[in-house]
Amino acid sequence: MVGVLVAAVNHFKIRFRGEPLYPSDFAYVGEAELLISSVGVWTAVGALGALLLVGVLAWGGVLLLGRLLRIPPAAGTDVPRWVWALRAGTVLVAAALCLLVAGFNSAGNPVKQAYERAGAGWVAWSQNENYRLNGFLGGFLFNMPSAPMPMPQGYTREVVLESYPPGAEPPPDLERDLRLLQYDLAVGNAWATDLALSVPEP
Image (cartoon, rainbow, N blue to C red):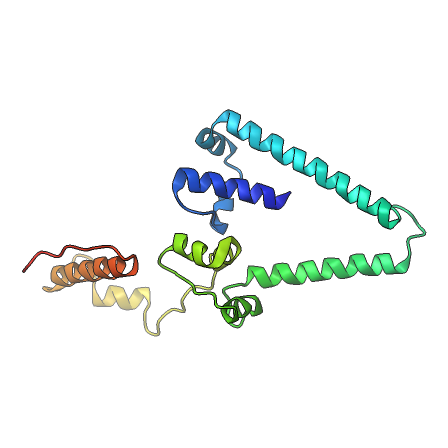
């Protein structure tokens, strides 16, 4: 059921925004009015109906499987110990997997190492390409939160204000350096995305 919901959201985001679903997009879960207005009322109603249908079918499948395997109901007092052990083990494994997935971008994460051993190639500058090469799950995990870069030694607010106090004249080469930086960023982005960049002659 969750997989169907994620697939539907990913489809609509690619359709309307031209990009896949990112972990940060879950911040819009509480913006129901915005989401419905983006995809249309009838589309949202149809997607919700399909999701409910999948949920009902999944629940019926679980009940049918329980009857076929003769698994006793959870509310009973005579549940065998192996059933409780299986349930507890499932919860522990699921919790461990959630922790590993949440820290996908942390150093030494075994899930990320497994992806890289399997030949995953991360494309940090183009998430569309990243998802295409590594699949939805790989691209989604690559966009999980990561630790920020450590603060450079000696780089503090006080040091910056001391070097460039408010109201002081900017360095004489600042404008030239900014233009060079913009040019370098443009060229680097063009090379990374295989775009043709026309540079006028000096």
